[in-house]
Image (cartoon, rainbow, N blue to C red; front, side):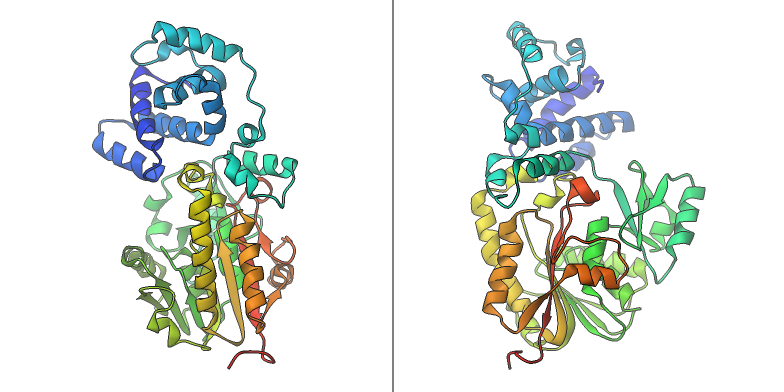
Length: 423
């Protein structure tokens, strides 16, 4: 990676903010570019690429920095010396004499070989993956170090995948179908797809293939009542609405007014009219209680650590902690229990996260099932097979970035049984 003196100075300053882990790194970068509009596209790309590479390889870079403090300048210099083989004469303000001596030593060292450094995962994350062996953790960590592809979902209310794919290829995009989702298209690189007419008309939306699969296994149908309990920005909401052929009633619940506001322009593009964005105060809001036993499908994409999205958000592994995950576990259990009350007899409940930690996934599901005998697990393999999706991860959907080239998603499909359903 070649870095100019100008880029070097910007990278050090941006990294300085990122390494405090007080705000999401993509927000920091966006704010920086907004404040430095004079930067051209080449500089912006180099700055972004360098910063996010440093975050992805931070366990190794911290080890290489020792005994120096792993501040932004030292982290960048270590990356240039050891990872990129950059000519260090390209550094912005020039190297100090002690830095030259230190970097000569860094260049001669062997790469750190601890599992945390090889997998680029903090030790606390590794400690919570007790269900995986060292080779699996290493494979997963290396998968999370890769840059995520740009996946699109075709809005079936407005287009067919084969037709959309042909149009994108004709317009010069390097595009292929996604291997699992029947609605997905994968683009090579990071083209500005939001400026394309198909995006502006609502024919396509940006959505990771894994996220598409979560919506698909919810299995929404025409004329049903469906609830997207933690709707967020609404990617899965819109997929569910299209599954329902714009019929029935689809509630998009969220506790964030801002997120629901961001959903509205996307809904306008999509052509959906069966979606009802609904702001709730908490999971036990009266609006939730009014739907007790009425919904045929309830999707709970629960708030989580986001450990499955490290390809896009490598800073998350440092902005989360054992304590924050423990707090999330309490919230996840409460949200799932509350959402389950809305499920009708014979209806489907899907609990999902974008986490890879069993504490946020199977442990939450097992505890829920133990406390709610009126629900039983439906093998995800059977659901996927019924939908003719060529994927089998067993009883639950567990997507691994290293294997499936999606974000790391988890989902458990449950049904409410007629014989034992609570009154």
